[in-house]
Every structure is written in structure tokens, then in C-alpha cells.
Image (cartoon, rainbow, N blue to C red; front, side):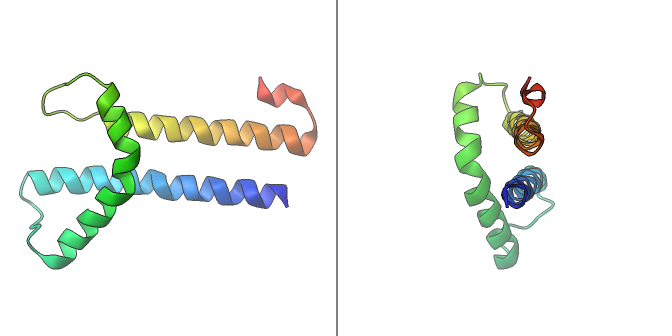
Length: 104
């Protein structure tokens, strides 16, 4: 039961990982004018990605100094997601095996 819960949380984090990557690519393509955001479908996809990722990216952007037009907050968020995935794997291994060595 516990491994199923950990699996579900990891899968949700991987889905969020891809949402952050897609949002960064979408934002870049829209800013260069490759994607026409006046198209209703394109706008809907961009709005969805913005609403999903912005709550996690905004605190990172507020914390970071300004780098001009370069936004590295998605990279930092991806690193944080990866750190959480590693931490979850270690906690799961410690719970399943009963060994505390995986938490170190």
C-alpha cells in the first residue's frame, strides 16, 4: 500500500516536471512569435500551462535577482523537483527495508 502511494506521488511529480518543461518551451516559442497566441487553441494551452506552473515559479522569481530577460526559474524548479524525487525514493527505501542508512 505504501509503495503504491509513493509511486503515485512520484508520477504526479514527473507530470509536473513535464508541465514545467512544456511551459518554458511554450513561453519561448510565443515570445519569438513562432506560436500565434491569438489562436484560441494555442491560447488555451498556454493559459493552462501558465496556471499550472506559475504558482510554483512565482516564489522562485521573487527570490532570484534580475538577470534581464533570462528566466532561470524553471531550471531551479526542475532541480527542486528532482531533489524531492530523490528524497522520496530514499524515504520509500528506508520504510520498505526498515534500514535508516537510506536516509543519509
